[in-house]
Image (cartoon, rainbow, N blue to C red):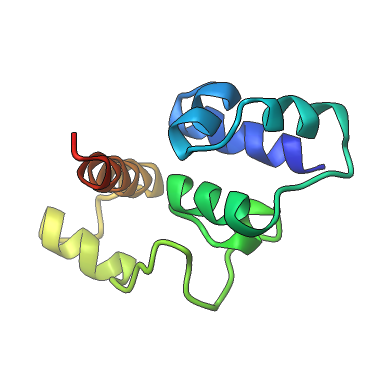
Length: 116
């Protein structure tokens, strides 16, 4: 069910589903529709906006897990390179710490995109 995955992504980002939709530029009625219609899922531009908002691939958006194809966020830096650049090593960095850094980077990119 798409809404469960969407809610999980929202929880990880610390926002409500309605707030995520509005920040992504999607009508909040879409959230209600996804919740009430378990077989529904976004397509086209709506899916793309959600991918960009969460910084994930469409496969991840639909709950299929990470894809080998390029993600919506065009991320080309390897995790190991990022950890070394930010922390001078990768041994003491947890996956949670790395996820926090990536989430913050996506947040700052979104602020820049919106001119904030």
